[in-house]
Image (cartoon, rainbow, N blue to C red; front, side, top):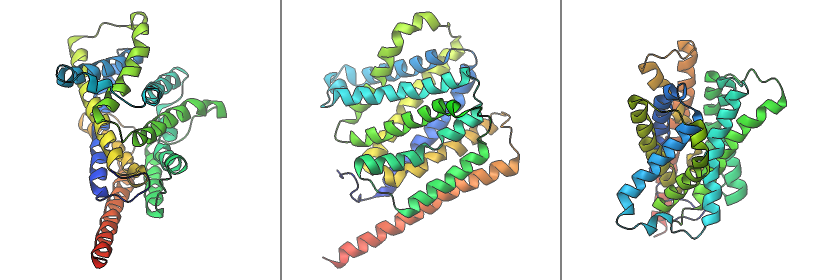
Length: 304
C-alpha cells in the first residue's frame, strides 16, 4: 500500500474508481431530486444512511459483525462521519436561507481544488501542474453550468463554503484512513450520521409513499456504492492524482436530467461547452497519467 505522496503502481485504477464514484453520485442526485420536493431533507439523509447500514448488516453482520466497527481510530472515524452530515445540512440550510442552487453549487465545486490544497498541506500529496490545470479547466466548466450570482453578502458564502469544506475534508480523511478496512470505514461513515439524526426523526418524519420508499432505498444502495468507490480510489492513489475526476459528476447528472426530460435552464451551446471542458480535462489527465506510468516503467526497466 502506497504512502501519502508516493507514486502508485497504476494510478489509472484509482481514476476508474473515481469515475465510478462520480457516476454513482450523479445517479443519486438525479433520482433523489424529486423526492426532496416531497419529503424533508433530513429524512432523506437519514433514510439514505439507514439503508446503507441495513445493507452492510445484511451482507457482513451475520458472518463477522465485529469487522464492521473494528477500527484503530474511532474518534477520527466519527469526525469524518460528521462531515457527511455537515455537507447535506449546509445544503438544506442554504436552501432555507434562499441561496440559489446555481450559486450554491458554484461555490461547492471549489471542492476538488480544495482537496488538492488540503491533501498537500495535510498529507504532503503534492499535485503536479497538469493536475492543477485539469482541475482549473473543469472548474471553469462547472461555473458555466452554475453561474456564481445571487449572493447578497459575504456571510451568504458561509453555508456553500461549509458544504465544500465538508466534502473536501471527508475525501482527505478517507485517504488518511487507507490503512483501515473498507467495510469499517463505510460502516462508521453511516453510523455517525444515523445516530445523530435518529432522535430528530419523530419531529420531521413525513410518511413516504410506496414509490418514494423505493426511491429512498435506491438512494441508499447507490450512495453506499458511491462511497465505496470513493474509498477505493483514495486507497489506490493519492488525491493529488484523482481529485479532478470528481468533476465528472456534473456531466453525468446533466445527462441523466436531460434524459428524464428536465429543464436544465441553460442553452445547449453553454451546456455542451461546459461538458467539453470537464470531460476533455479528464481525458487529457488520463492520457498524461498513462504516459507518466509508461515512462516510469521504462525507467525502472532500464535500471534492472
